[in-house]
Image (cartoon, rainbow, N blue to C red; front, side, top):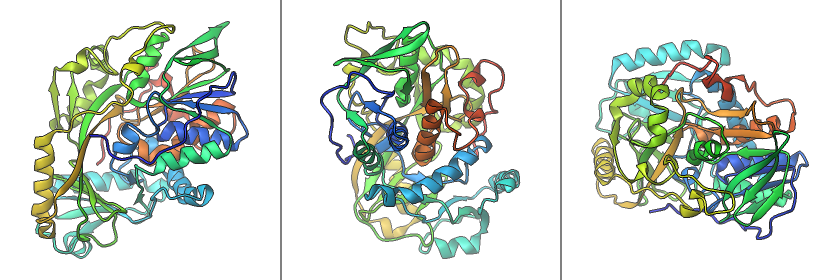
Length: 444
């Protein structure tokens, strides 16, 4: 079942030309559109389904700096700053609040890992610190669980996935961006090797720049254009509770070994299990299996692997099409995976066991999602060197919502050739082919 998402007006007519065409209306794509429109550029967002219909509305809603891989830290810090400005700029509610964020553990070895992480991040002057058991009891009153320590960041926060990307999209539209929904991009044309037009199911838009921000569908689209991108999808399941008592003080979200939660504006909680998901065996997965092996070894304990319909359909299949025919993006307007019922029940049971006040609270809604992941768990925000005019912003590996505003802003800076908000080097597409990819690090 799809979670509810705020609506965004759709422009029915395609412009004949635009400075930039963005493929995908998730938080990365609409953030890029917002910042491009603020710079005065004409921009069109083309979304095969609806704005924030896939992972941008299905994530946990965490906005954090702690737990990020070192290459992501400047982007995470920049994004936190942008989140703090958005409601005022947009005149709308994204749900962003600096609530503090907390990860807890029973494992002393994990505490040692946190200490190492904090030492490595000292140069960034982060405000994270490790809490002892007594401090956790104050922050999490009423819990029956015996956590030995917690990693806490007071400057991190949360936002509402159902509201944020739609609010940003409406803001971009007020600045002149064109938002076209229920319209798939089938590919693009080139002239002298450079992008010259984007072909959609409704017609062609002349342009010199295309930004591919299609989440889990990006690798498939690039492959159609002869561009390789090692990307894999991880299926995840999330639940929303009914309105429930407040169970934490000084933090809007908690990550634990058995469950993770975020306090919602509606008084309930979004709850899921950290580090757990399903990877389907697919043609794309087989193609890039060697790329993902180091990451799989590090985090494989929480992943199940299966063979199913994803082998034949969806974003990792071997679908082929012509730009004058129906594409896979038209066949699946909104990818709506079925949540894992057993995992949902287990997660809710562990949440209720840790907080007795939750015992009488029911599950209001459940949904599934597909997380676009990279072999080093660091996104690609980059020009494609061998395809002038083609840019990519994808593979946020479960971090895309929190990094969304700065990820979109960096993509906009690269497209326009402006001074980038952060150094884009860590996010180069070419790192997967020239031996400079990052180590597969998973902090929390």
